[in-house]
Image (cartoon, rainbow, N blue to C red; front, side, top):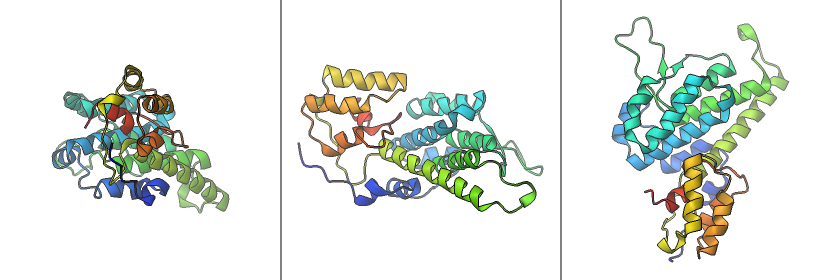
Length: 262
């Protein structure tokens, strides 16, 4: 196999997911789901949709059933365009200026699927669905930070230094996790991804299929061992499987490579 171009250093070290997304997606070209799906290449839309859903899953424990359902439908729509109609019907009702971490979490699910903000009183027609994985990530990080620090003082009162430190710490930790999600879902820029058919042994294929079907990607490091046993020496691919962060999820680009996606 040809030698692969190693990813640029920023890809390996950045803690801000927006820095990484800038390398694979020229900044948000559309906030409306319809426009985004029309203007972006389908493979990119798929990965962005899975990234937004993965971010929303970070607050899964506080999402109401309807928001969880919308995120699940968004994941399904990534690989099945026919699920788009059901996704629109399950639109999450979103709030302007959310004040609790539960509201922020629900907004994250809306941005990750096809949410709807309440229409202003003077608006004409029904509210339009919105979809933007960048906003889904930010709202998720805000929700986790607000939950960790506690609610901000009411009435616009100044926050304490301790509250701000706790909020910033939790927000940064969430964003660092999201940066790992980007690295897990998007192949590194300038990386010439190729997958030898010889590596698709019964064991490799079975591991990838089981993770993809179950949604449990804890066996990705084991997949690296199976790939090596099959003769794979691609350091970038094996390194992704064995990422020290242990962050793996639906859309993992190595699993997608095994399954012949893109």
